[in-house]
Image 1 (cartoon, rainbow, N blue to C red):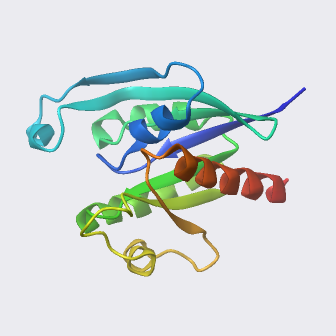
Image 2: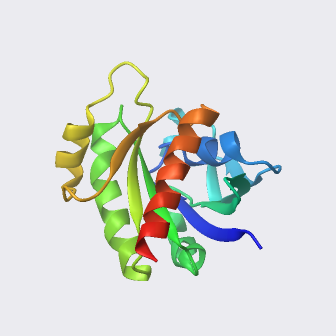
Length: 174
């Protein structure tokens, strides 16, 4: 029997959660993207309203990836999705510093749901105008012990590196 892990992929609005899950999933992603009807329409056309679900097998471990909605009006889903999680990833948009305080709030919230390992992942680290991992660490007020790493959520190898790090943290924590 393979090791099964439930990983939550959370983060502020437009941080790349749906892309992250879609890029690596071996199955068609269950997605709840819907047209945006709020003032966020100018940012992107659709948003996740319940969750994104994907699955991937890495080194004999089956990862169930659950992407959360990024808008706080859907926050009632967060605790439901956090049920039985083994770890969580907080994806941040490294080109959008004003969204970083939201990441700090998400870390506190998901840590209250269940004490599990987590990573902070600086998505869009390959894009112009991104801020450094050190700046992100300061903005989020992250403890030095928390792993923060860069990512391109549209790159399978980049997403895989993040998930390998997550597996390592989970297995160290057992």
